[in-house]
Image (cartoon, rainbow, N blue to C red):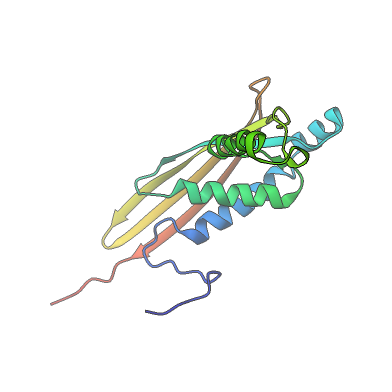
Length: 176
């Protein structure tokens, strides 16, 4: 066993991996915040938009931990400081429970009030898909990630992003 730096690319199988997740999230979020929808919204509302990540479906032929990819998207969105990122449904439920507990157990001057949450202006949804081609020990795997940014109030798709990755894996054949 050898430990390696997490920044080192280790792609042994050709399957979706941590490097793919990180690179796709970085590229797509960089592209998302550079498109006109952001400036248009900011000018119209005099504030940055709030975004929540909805369902990202794994339509690929392999197991992909979509949760890791969503976390990469959330990190890139939050760190861009170009949008506000709203916590997921599961996170919000836990935070709401904490506020209820504070109302009973915390000093009044430190309690956080209910009803102060920000509603999301946009929801990001998407898919991860694959196409596989294989012949004579060579396998090609084509990944396509599609993300939509949908206005929660109007249902208008305000941004559509797509990132593609193509991998070729050659299997050595044993000759006897």
